[in-house]
Amino acid sequence: MEALVFEVFGSLGHFRKFYTTSSALTYPFPPPTVLRGLVGAIIGLEREEYLTHTKDLKFAVQILSPVKTLTISVNFINTKRKGGGFEPSLKAQSKAEESARTQVIQQLVKDPRYRVFVLGDGNVFETLREHLELRKFFYTPVLGTSEHIAEIEYVGTFEVKELEDVEGRCYSVCPLELLEDLRITSIKIGKELIPYRMEEDRTASYTEVLYPKEPNTTIEGKFKKLWFVAMPSGEVGVCFMPHV
Image (cartoon, rainbow, N blue to C red; front, side, top):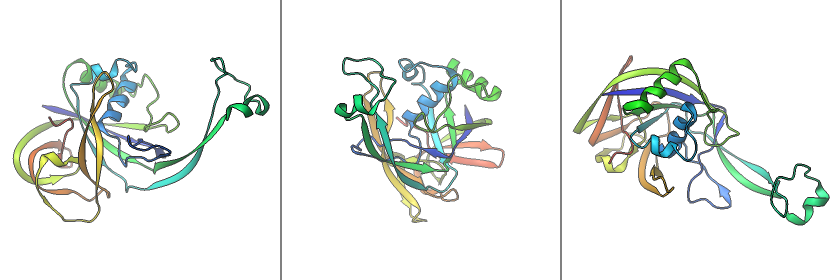
């Protein structure tokens, strides 16, 4: 069994939390649903098909930079005519009656860098490997939204072994369901409720996860399942999602 590993980073990122309304809060890392979209962008899958073609892939994400966020105000401008269609002029007089501008508070992740592990096989896995090796991206990769352009560095493909009922350290985001016993070794561990699976009809399944807030922090304890990736620097324990 092999895992494909690459790093993704940029100046800013936004991975909108599903329960936010007027203020757009962000997850500190890309959930598996976002990573499916990123894979689709790299290999050229359309919005209507990427969920189907990537459904057999599993993802683990390791946070490589300290989690930092900032909050900004974003102005959204209505560019639609009353009767439909695009209105390119944006004249204040013609737009005044339509409340053209809406201001939203948006939270962003600052200077994010992540290591993404992809577990799978078949055509999609091999196509992804080829595109990463050649640095050939069909669509522009982004960190959540179109205005946050991502850089991608291919690390390689490495052997993976899966162990059950094992004591160890997890360097990635970890679903609580995979933990039998947690040892609290640091206060720099966060908890989130994230979407980890999305069906073709856009219905999502959610799970609670723990994540290290600092690059050198790990989640320690006894795990129901833990995957060990044979990286050049040594074995790295990670948790893949979907895990069921």
